[in-house]
Amino acid sequence: MTGVLPVALENATKLMPALAHLEKEYVGVMHLHKDVDEDLLKKVIAEKFVGKIMQIPPVRSAVSRRPRIREIKFFDVLEKDGKDVLFHVACEAGTYIRKLIHDIGQALGVGAHMTELRRIRAGCFKEEDSHPLVEIRDAYEFWKEGDEKMLRKILIPVEYAIPHVKKVFVKDTAVDSICHGAPVFVTGITRIQKGIERGELVAIYTLKEELVALGIAKMSSEEMFKRKKGVAVRTDRVFMERGTYPRLKR
Amino acid sequence: MEWLIRSVEETDESYGKRPNERTIEELIRNSVINVDKHAGPTSHQITLWIRDMFGVKKAGHSGTLEIEEIPE
Image (tube, rainbow over all chains, first blue to last red; front, side, top):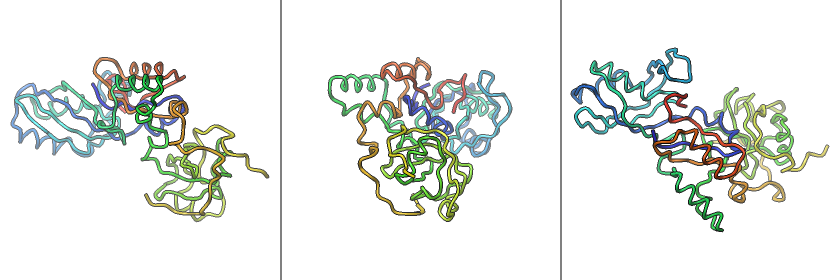
């Protein structure tokens, strides 16, 4: 299998909880064990394999083999050449595509297996912006020789890798205590992205748009906006080094 | 994006640094790379290769492309 694989370096590995459940998109080839009519194929897929589906993880999987619900956003048949079907699918994280193809084969009564799979999107990471290893190696070598332009284009700062995580901006004076693990108090907040719910993973930013930490919202956006005091976000993973901003003088 | 504004504040330019002003060394320790994985090596092998090339202490990937593991 090939395609989009987001790789986080050093401090950025702390982003993992935020990058763990991204929606995925793939293109692949399904090989039918007997030819079936294209209209029938499309009908079965549309009726049984789009929307919420029940999936039993395959034998060789890291999770327990309990049936679980996964959402297939769309499943398009791009091309059919005899028993080979080129498809394009978008699905929730944790969907086993190989199993999905096997199950489609079963539903059609002819059997099928997947012969090729390429991931073309994982959340905000798209195929057209991805870099093969040789390109990354070249960029690294150019940098070593004094030209950083290419490498700068490849490295995505943590701030831009999590556009799906809602943001809370804090005052300069609140930053250092958060770096020490203190929670975010409403009085330290300048602005809040709408739509945050209690318990949601949120990103805490400085006014210079630096990621300070990831945290768990203890209030909704509205509450963070209206309340006069209290904890808005419990700090979870700190990205910024202590002492980057001055310590608040009491 | 829609925002709720609690207060309008200034930021002191003598502290911190905007993400696009970071040095390459700083970026390397605080970035994600969108890799186009080729056939052959596992996602894990690709990640180790990148870790070693950049000489960073650790690297991690999001969502493996191997069936044996959790396809996040």
